[in-house]
Figure 1 (cartoon, rainbow, N blue to C red):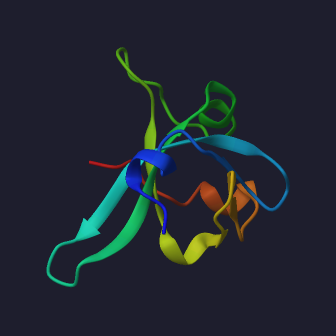
Figure 2: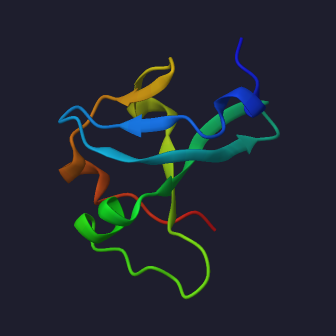
Amino acid sequence: MVSLKELTGRKVVTTDAFAIGEVDGVELDLEKGNITHIRVDLSKEAANELRFKKPFMGNVVICVPMNLIQAFGHVINLNVPLTQIKTLKECQ
């Protein structure tokens, strides 16, 4: 089992080897007790490539659904290429 503290800061990489950013936290379904998404703090390069507008203060954080995660390790590998990340929304 991996704690949230251990998960935070791990790099997130797409199937086409693009490092999109680092884990910033998780989104939970409190009724079911499940993690539904990981929050990913996008790198400048990823935010530009994905055409997200960087806020004046802080970074762009997107919510990546758990079903897009292929493997957890020192790096979190997604099972989709960068082009499919473009459809994700910023976390609220």
